[in-house]
Length: 331
Length: 255
Image (cartoon, rainbow over all chains, first blue to last red; front, side, top):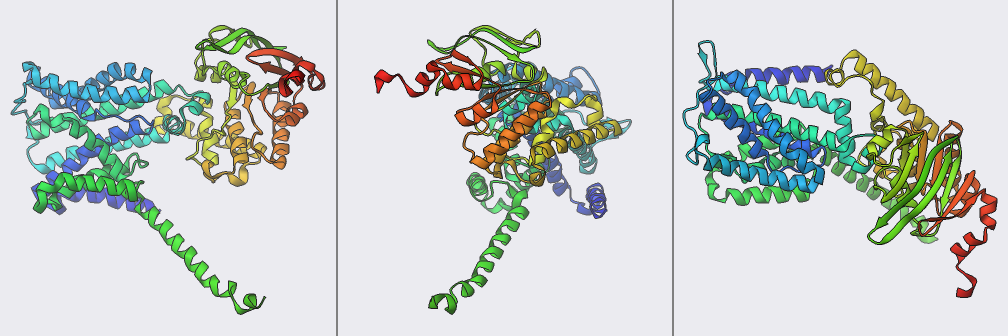
């Protein structure tokens, strides 16, 4: 029961947040956290199958550009372009990754890396996609006569997309599909012997992940209203991995969200030393990998371990005087 | 009745024949022991049956169906379970979850119901939970069900590996060195468990180095050397077979 109350309270805070924060810049940051959370989760769903994708920026870009072109050139409303962007991204994933996965996780790793570079180069080189200058003045989403202009309206849109994403991933992880993914992540040969079609399940995870990366891209396009190919660089793919890593790789939903929050808010705190930002990021990653391999979400667990360790040492210390008591010494 | 027929099965690694023109039959309800010196091709043989290796030539027929070219998960679905040599379990999961996940192919309901967590899907899950407990009960793992599989002692990991294979509801179970590295008490326990499994109507092929155990356990024994079958028969016949003694102890001239 208390858990339910906590959840309801959390939900209420999220819904009421624009009225609590009342600052466009902070809302902007929160919208980015939501967006990057989705990107991080699309990495995590593949990581659950022990597949490492280095190309989430590429699939993000496919979604963003599909949506932008459908709205600008075909005149589709945003609400149709949004799912279309997800489907386009999923189709690209299906096409490329179904071949890459035949080779195994390493080929998958390489192929995602290559495809994300290729997508960026193609978007820049082909004039149809706007070239290196990108696409400007994307139309904003509308409902009837209401136009999504304010940060508050975008906040709710982002919140809706993130919640949908979280719910769908949660339902998947809870189902037998999620259990098959867990099995694959733990041992592919053993999973195979339990009758799990490892190839298919891995492909499904990759396609679903890329679908949501595409959805996220569509939102990004119509939020920024400007698309430049360089946004979708390799660095962005690495960042998607960092969200998951910093939050905690074994927390497939909460991890990327926590990680994205840290990675978006950290630069704000580092404003005064902006030129050292890459160094700080690097240090952060190293520190987390060395001292907190479970990510920041593992801190509570970690502390309980530390606490029990202290308790054990304490018990040992208390026990010491008796073990080297005079009685024993006389013997 | 013949459950598994192997005809002219060969597997070459480069020029080396790991399994060479092997013919054998496995009969319904028996425990077939498979022995031979290191490198005789025993594990390769299991990998061929379970689909991890594709044979260079030959045929594998299970219950009248040719399964030679099927993938491991398809073979598992047809009723061949397997435990691995190196105590392979899902290390990061609890004992209960290990077996629970193992029931993957038992779900009959649709994916959508699972996704929406409908009443039917929850009922199905509950049924599988109960089946999981049944297996843990039989294998004596109930007291350990919340332990992480990776933290279990070696012997229990092996038992858990067999439990996982049982979760696929097999008719033929392949055990790769089930008692290797176990102490005598654990070996007795494992022998008892394997007999129990057979009494439930599951046929077993057991690969093992421990001669005493295999002699005790098997109904029939096949001896491999350099991928070839050199002897076949009852345990007593095998222990008196000169060829087998030669293979295990070396020829007298060499001494």
